[in-house]
Image (cartoon, rainbow, N blue to C red; front, side, top):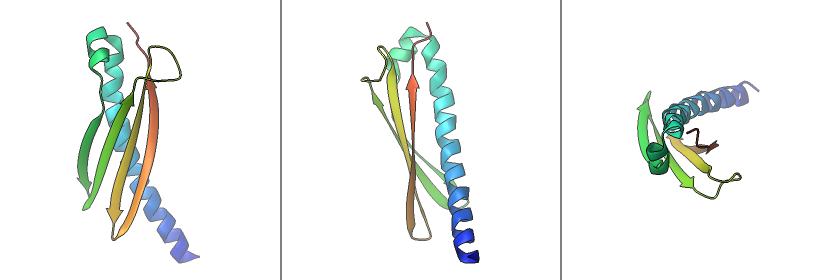
Length: 99
């Protein structure tokens, strides 16, 4: 039971770092919704960050086919490898024009 608890704690630790990386990107991209030119230029990204020796790779793709007209759906997947264990988390956000 202790081993399982430690494993889950470690996974939660890494998911938190990955989620914070995506959240930071979404916050910056959200500002683009208020300007027509910026919103039109909104696109995906590929980024990597090393936190405490673990490399997190974020890949965000943008789809113009969103559930609502004129909106854009972005899907970000973050992958990391911790001591030989490959893991990932995925986040989806829908941007809408605010201008």
